Image (tube, rainbow, N blue to C red):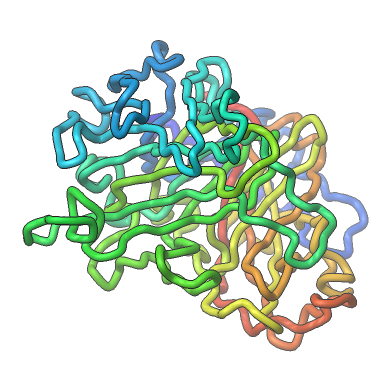
Length: 467
């Protein structure tokens, strides 16, 4: 959605209110009662929306009045897009430009990935949407219920193109965020026992990059319109629970590169040595349930956007040890969950633990005001057992052998009932010789000093902004 003028006005208003609001937020871990969130009348109810960035480009939002079922503005449905797989090919005159004939047929296209022998069905649902918007619908991918022997791993090529997004006008050289809302169903729930090595990666986003090399293109790896040059297939891993809308923000720090060993370190912007930008050169994106489920799986996708943190309220962020970040709210149970992968340059293993802190506010959190924001008290992987008594609200990785960080927490109902947006920030507080818990394996110190002094920010829309 294009709201640039309004975004700038709201951003300015939020900045004026920032000091007044945050000074009333608790930053004292010893406080027994939550502080008043705002001074009386300092912020009106339902009006604390601030855009993620002053320049957000929407890839897909399914907000046209005609979007429903297999009708998608600018796209043409076909029962056989490629290799007997159903989906859409791009028409003409839309945001992405015109469709074109390339080596794989007409592109770009959006079609069934059909991995694992599992046929996937799709529809645009006009009356189900992410909480951040009051218009349009969402993109539903789901297992074919007639395929009883399939492993229930819903997957879909969201975009399969022959040229990078920068040439489609979607991303730029400084783009470093892919943001979307997703709601999953049918997935086995994550193990919330708080045990070691219990959190599984159950969903992933696969990406392919390409750029032209000036040389003839004969096969995969040669460059556009195919993948490459070289091996340019990456993965962003997520550990997600079903049943609620989740806000996911992927950065340019993938969690896996095809062919590399599990747990390997991958650099931010892995194509920087080639003088390229990860999101600028992205040409293909798919999303899939990563492991077999006991029941049919599905996901609803909405508000797929790209932006740069250089135009956000905090341009200096930690994408090194806090990657593939997401946060979600379950309103019926009044709890939140948050997770990410620790992408720090270590090989997970014995004595490679790290520690984090989460804070929240009703206004954007920056490096400058982070200490004044409210402390989140996690229900899982936090407390004396995991991090000791000095800072019991700290959050530990589930194990020194994995990169998973995940927890659950609550916020005051006066916030969830009365505001459009909640803003979160996570900080790496790892320190050699500290944060030992009282139980194995968390009774060991951190792997070393935090790799970045900066926060990692994300927001969550409780309701659509009143613009």
